[in-house]
Amino acid sequence: DADVTQTPRNRITKTGKRIMLECSQTKGHDRMYWYRQDPGLGLRLIYYSFDVKDINKGEISDGYSVSRQAQAKFSLSLESAIPNQTALYFCATSPGQGAVGGELFFGEGSRLTVL
Amino acid sequence: LAKTTQPISMDSYEGQEVNITCSHNNIATNDYITWYQQFPSQGPRFIIQGYKTKVTNEVASLFIPADRKSSTLSLPRVSLSDTAVYYCLVGDFEMGYALNFGKGTSLLVTP
Image 1 (cartoon, rainbow over the protein chains, first blue to last red):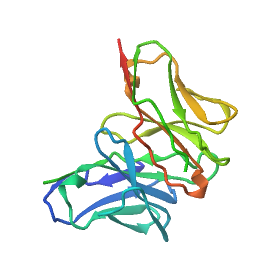
Image 2 (image 1 turned 180 degrees about the vertical axis):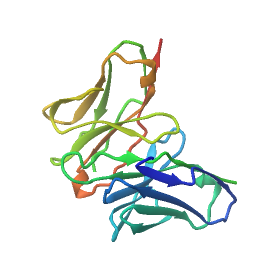
Image 3 (image 1 turned 120 degrees about the horizontal axis):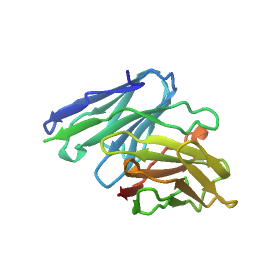
């Protein structure tokens, strides 16, 4: 089983619908992240959390919200989806400690299409 | 937060050594340099991390000059399966700097 699991893996929805992407991890890491990837634009950080009580906005947080329900769970919500939020979304975790604190472990991605 | 600059794309033939250089002129004292590899429709995968001089692991080497304003990822004898996008990240990860990937370098390896 994957250490970082994202659900759903694929989702097609309509403009204006509320969508939640879920991420769970079994690595025991404190730090979790949500990224968005669009063709040719690399990965852009949406939100990140360094522990259950710590939530931070990333580069492109507008239109998104997050919830850190537990150390192992970090959910991304689109309150009212719009077509330009069509993208591949990745969840990641990191231990955040020591010299290799920067190593990120990624989920398999959630492909979202907003019609 | 250190800004990084990488070539957009590179081409290589199988069996050659590939060097991808990343420029990070405003790197801070506590910043580490980390490289990731990403295949289409997959999450990035950690390749190597370093602070100064040279780091080598089973898949790559990372060269960092004394001034640390750049770094070079070296992939020895690439194969077709090394075709991917490579990202250079710079940051003080323990202090919590956001980890922005940028656009990366798209490497194409051909026979």
